[in-house]
Image (cartoon, rainbow, N blue to C red; front, side, top):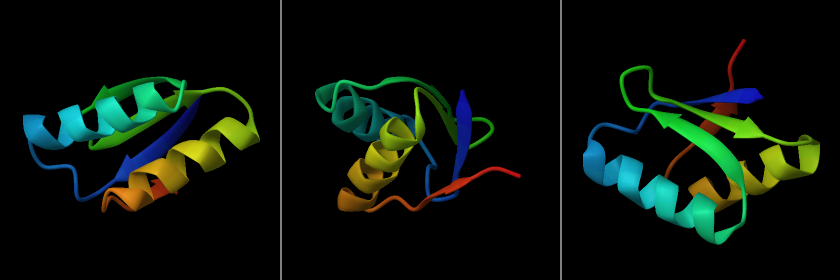
Length: 65
């Protein structure tokens, strides 16, 4: 899994928006509000798609170090 930091994720509403868009994109993922992360299960293309989909709804996702 690739872990992405999503600093703007602040509440359950944010989690729902991210979950809805990534589910619609057909991705396998886990959202962790406490850590402000999204873990994407898949290859580089899946990670890029997740980043793009979150960007489209106003969230900046960056790979964790």
